[in-house]
Length: 217
Image (cartoon, rainbow, N blue to C red; front, side):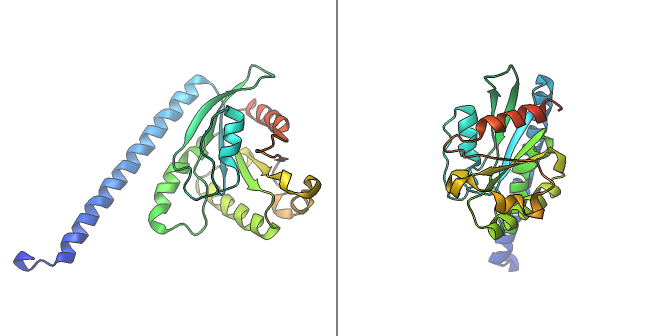
């Protein structure tokens, strides 16, 4: 390049500008979410957020509870942004705002961490977090993913008392046996409910849990 400037210097300068632009967009996104949180509080409607590993069934459950038809897929990054809908329970006059968030991913590349945490930031404002777990997986896999979820929620400063463990895909277990989870000390501090989002099994019990927990919000 002219005046002794190397091509790599030009590329680095362009990258720095791009990084600054992305950081500015993330900051604006946080500001918008903060405003949305304030508006939701004005409505006086409890805010419930779905969280959990990719492919745990969050979007399938979201569609069940909201009668939406969001795309549900085992592929990564199917859900990239937060979707929020009002849910009215047929057996009461109670309503909640239900939010579907991006799925947790292990060993996330460093350059994506800040963006994902920005998207997941809404979890810290939720009155109740439904932490989805694929109960059909081997126990070692369940434990590893659950610990990863807990670490992420802790980093987001989510109160463990606002977490309800939702054991999904119980239809894939013989006789809906969840003893391998019930007997594990890792899960003993959390209230839990077992469901099948695809079959609709356990959803009435889940709704009762949501009503009971959010009535205190």
